[in-house]
Image (cartoon, rainbow, N blue to C red):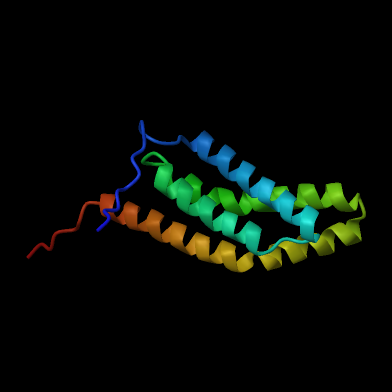
Length: 136
């Protein structure tokens, strides 16, 4: 029998700035790789988006849940627009079509990750609220 141990983190975890930087870097890197190899984004970038949601929620300090949930869609949009403009040049019609196609191709991953992230955030927020005792 093997025992599964939870990975221990040294220290309190990532700050808000660290979460933003790491999520932006990993999403941007995988967006670049997929645009370079396939000329479009898809499963590889989507998997990295889901991993960035989970990793930030898992390795972030208490109080960084909001940043962990909000950053991946913004980071993906900024990185996708940047890399599409680098690869396509500044042709507004081509950039616009490729950008909308990139957003559409990772939309399921963004929806799944955001749903999970907002559930964790709102659940944690509800647990910190004092319960309203019934007054009879």
